[in-house]
Length: 282
Image (tube, rainbow, N blue to C red; front, side, top):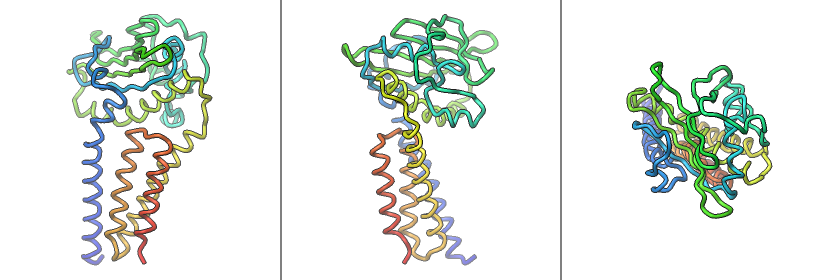
């Protein structure tokens, strides 16, 4: 391998890795409080533990009584997790998000199990305050709560409600590095859940095509990044393709961790495509 080509590849890898790390560090403070106001981030919520936590929120154009039935049926084997079932089921979780209110799960009690996956029921309902708070906790062998997942409904007016999700951890529950790793899949699934509950409560029919579109936009950004990487390695005109590759990393971070509107996903991919056409080696 010529030295110049080796240097080009190592330079490209270094820049992409730097962009990935720096980009995630820049995005992280936003996804940890996605959609939440300063007041919502700092507000007291039942069951909040003293360690790391994050709060995410969305406005639902419905009163609390229309949202509440969707919340109390949350969980595997119940109403599902309102997220990417296909991704969860790839991991064997056997989760199926409900598209209707399930009467058999409308009367939970404190102590009821909330399962993460089939036969994995380590969390139990810890708070029920109708039309306001519903949450569950996992505890250590001594019974001390180590993790809380709390759902909250804060009325805005007669026809809209703020829907909040807060996760919190006991400071001694697990190493900070482990919680940081949990953040990554957590934000992907949780932002989808916020949007799904919003759509269900607002009476918007579920559409498989939305998820297909989201996946397509993500894969398209990835594919354009791969093409740019190949051109960077193979062509003496490598700087422009490298720039497109770096931009694809940024776009993938935004698509993955910030859950942008559907129209913005198309705009971001269109911008990448234009850059790729411009950067094509002649």
